[in-house]
Image 1: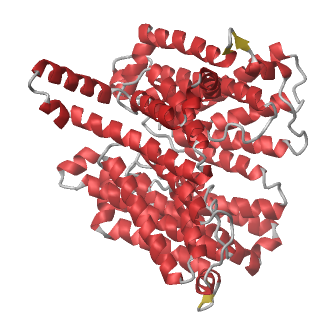
Image 2 (image 1 turned 180 degrees about the vertical axis):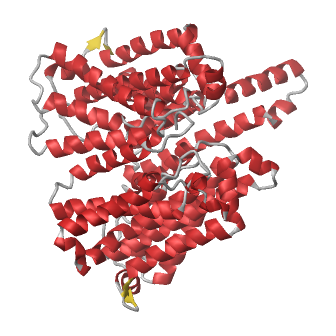
Length: 308
Length: 329
């Protein structure tokens, strides 16, 4: 399919090579890295980020950005911590994702508000709501949810399965469905897409809904993993998911990106954190190194556009 | 609109009312928003409108005002600066931890120079390397604040220099000094942008960077200069925040970049329209700080405050953008 063209996927040797280099480096120097326990920890650590970042990919494909994913995660975790029935928690989180995505998408597509401002205001609102639902970290997560996020099925740890499911679903939607093709078309050239009969506004709303639902599920996953809700659980995920997406070769100007790239970006970020822990580097240096990595990554992706 | 129609017995008045409505709605949401806020404050919390408190709120708005000057300039040429949190963290660290034992007449300009250098670095990567402004400035902010957090294990942050604290307290004829500095920066800059070639090029780049470049305008240089200015403005607002708080803090300017972004948009700056001036964003900065104070005075608590804040900023942006969509057709 044409979507495998590097000009569309944004995949370069750097994007895909970075996690490979990191894995080789860590495996060669740190015996702890190869231990099963560390690999288990690792898949749990990156699980939530992967689910959010794959959602963020959909929004960036249509030249948007979603800063509300962090608050959506926090609120979803608050729901999970206050509901005793896991199904009710999942239903509420999903409904939350659909509602937030629709509001964001409508604001961006129909009113023409800039995505940064639109999602920033929903993020602020939802952060407040999260504090209303769950004023302090705590609550209890239904055992069934904890089991689903930390257990294992047919010998494979559950976090890994959830990661694979998120990546696979996104990959199929992007490569095999009409919606996926339309996402690339709208991101590449909205006017041209419109003239070719793509319903641009619905596609944009769809992208934001997908992103918010992914964020809500990531919130559930994270809450289930730490076995508690936290009204500030997702605070760092908004910018981290953007960073992961950018590391994966996705262009914030739209139309260029791939699930494989995002997975590589998330792996790079996760491996760096994991590696720093193993090397015993101060966790405070993590932000610095992430920043340096991001700068290096974007400097290697020269674009024609100046700005945003 | 129906109310103006019912006045059709005097068409002149109805027409003028309608004209006035169109004019007011076409203004950036900051103006109407400020009026609405002031009126609601007059009804609910009249003592917020006492000159004393208003001046204090104006003083409190100055750091955001400075950051907004930089942010709005950068946004007018279709870029974005999210690095002010990192710049302010470094400025606060340099001045309060004792790593830079210099007298203030040297130390303060050095801080502003540092801000400008960070802006120049951002500008270089954005203009020359053509990297995404969102990612570059975000990454620079992460690097700067991360470095400060890592370093503050060795040198704990302490008190702000006395000069900054007394500047924060100082008053000229009863008016706090800091907002006067804000106005003294804002007005000449606004006039200069309106009259100079640089201002014209800035608007041309904002309206259509490709056309500006093809017409031989120095469009890359404009983006670069805007980023340098924005970096220096971030450092300046950091100095003021330090003066108010009195103690160094890594999180000092953490939410400043996003608030400055909101203020710029509410003040009528719109990516890629070449529209927007200096006054609108300044009014929007005051409006936001007044809103925070108003919500606090209503005793809403953090959750309610956040919810209302999000709703109001979103509603203002929605109303403005919908309005401009109509007038564009």
